[in-house]
Image (tube, rainbow, N blue to C red; front, side, top):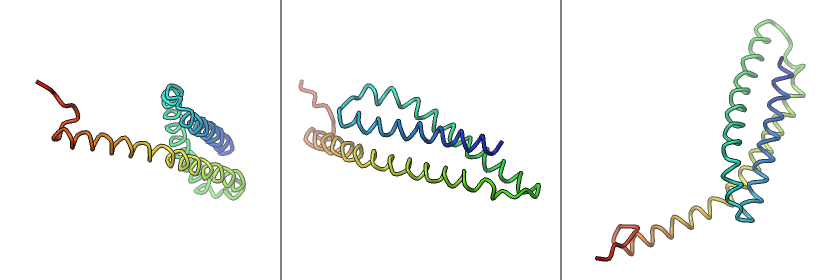
Length: 125
């Protein structure tokens, strides 16, 4: 059971990593439609990842309470940890691309609002 949970977690992590790499490419190519379409899939994957992580913790805890040596799962869990770290770094790379663009748009909107006396849209009567 634990082995299956670890395998599912690895699969989800791989899928998320691939989606983030695709996001990075789509940001560079300004392919916004693909980015938007992939968001729902990524959200579902992240929810599944969270749920399975909780299940894994419960399963490991139950095995430990039964007196079973859980170190037999160490290799698979260590591999999962490496994949999760890779996912974390890929997500950081995506954020480093997207956040400056977000900040640039925020500054543009702030400047327009300031020029229009606190309103984003200037109404001429």
